[in-house]
Length: 474
Image 1 (cartoon, rainbow, N blue to C red):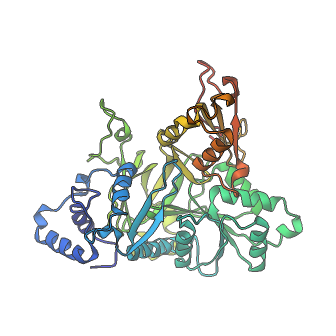
Image 2 (image 1 turned 45 degrees about the horizontal axis):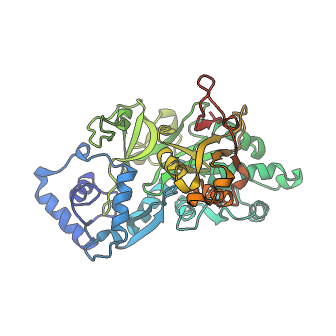
Image 3 (image 1 turned 90 degrees about the horizontal axis):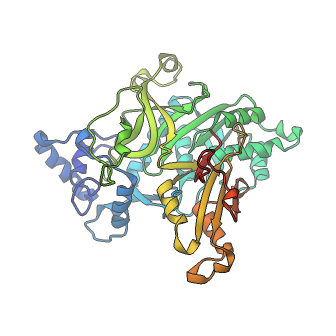
């Protein structure tokens, strides 16, 4: 068996006998995997086509993973030689513990590191300090660190809990030139830097920032450059389930004021399809379709479906990651500036990401929150929430770089607390902060307001209805 990327025919052969895509109870073990592939080659005439595989949604994947990851049956290949992590869990439900073959995961990180280096984001001589979040089973700092090291950089893992003054002192002491983190974290570090004496600011030698998760807004880009100077802004498109997908750099594709970001990806590592948005429209029974044989052509906008060509034992095929996107050829002007060999560059393409499908989710502080699950939590009977509202950004300040979120709650009167199990306000506050992933390092950007009347909410101009979600960042 090769070390990846794997032929699509082999990945589809495994899908035929994998619970994610079939009625089989268990995935193949490492020992039985070769038998599956040999049998597939013997039955070459009955091989599957990619479009015949149903689209895979996170809800479906979560159900399979929840069963397989705790099943200790020796036939269960899902629990063998794994790299384990959790997704962000920003939807309010329990974060999804996700397992993948440890060797396949390492090989994919190496491939993403190669892409990062080939596109000039990082190279030997770059020293990076990352303030990414990690811990509590979440391994993003380790994931990003390995990719950056594969690209040739040296990496210091500060994490999200390191005091910003210590972050700055470390960067000055070790002559670190790259600051890495989620977009919102980078803005917060830059805000701290802006408060320092000019003499200390001048000791910093930051030439690049490297961010993940949600896209930087034009206002945030402008703020970072106002504080840090004429820096190169680099980005990694990735997720816990899929690993690295693509990379971006302001030196290759200058960011615009449009609401999208462009990433270079390698189709030999990740196969991307753009699916019509209508796939997310429920039928008369309220169900969503999974079968889709229609892909949109280059340039047309739809939902992104991802097939990972480094996942053989537990394939991820046509996975709907929630992003709205379009696919484009790599511009010649970019192609000629890449340091990679032509044998690699000829394969590269561009995926334009417009962000999450706002009909189903929103982002704050690098976390994805699904509306339906947030609504479900806020409707918990013992919480006593009568009305709620989520406000992102600052009213009347679309250019404010701070990634703020305010949650406004109107709940049952205080005298009802304790009746029918209603939580005290203090306990409810704890639960809401937990729901929205509020920690010491981001709590200054979060506020929770309890209101007593509907006048305490932002309301529509026409029907004076409470608008559950307002994004002032746009």
